[in-house]
Image (cartoon, rainbow, N blue to C red; front, side):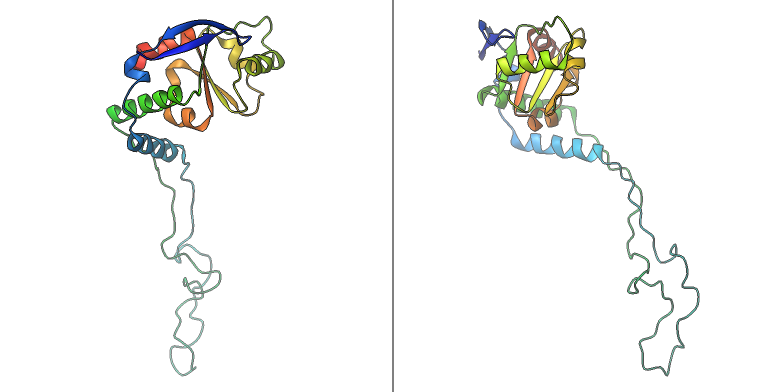
Length: 207
């Protein structure tokens, strides 16, 4: 059974907590992680690129010179792809890059990343994050006390909205609800900071 030391907002140890074996002691599949990250990045693409074909470029309706007798190569339009200002041969058009990855693959990838975070010492479990004022400065001091580093993903429960407000203006820090965690964010940020109540939700939803 995997275990982790839970601390308070001052960085003091509170107790040792047993973690779900299915989430934090799972076999690590790098290929599943690759597939899911590739899928997430593809879904983020806007796909608004658009170039013009020779039929869409303005001008070029007249034949630039006669077919024979000039000594030059025959040309039908100054908007052909080989001309400066001409159209693009296989012009990119707006398209949707999104697709879906099987649910089982997504689960395997998430379990792999959570297991890696724990094994690499990049997971910080906090009993609760209580602040007298939901201010950025207060929350920044809490992150410093617990050793969250410069890039941290803070996972909280739905009722911990003060943390989400206080963390908005801190560079390199992102907050996420326990039900919204994903493989890409877990990999992007160096450390995972999670509250005990959020951990309970993660183990209930994703186990």
